[in-house]
Amino acid sequence: MKLKKLIKKLNADNAPPDGWKKDDAVAKVPGPRPGKIYALTGGPGTPCIAAGNSWEESVVKEDEA
Image (cartoon, rainbow, N blue to C red; front, side, top):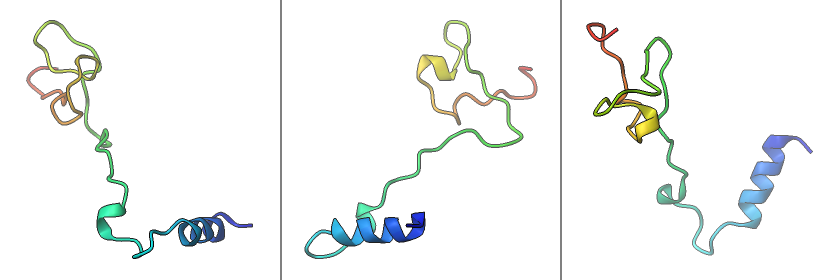
């Protein structure tokens, strides 16, 4: 069974009684973007992924590089 058919079957078999709604969709988790540089680790007070900051907060600006 092809993946596309399997997904359709699973969605049909597991649909709520009133059908799927937009709110049921899985939200996309923001991630790194091509062409940007991110701080994965950093010193105290420096926004970085390891400290729990978001990808957007961890972007390294040109004057910091």
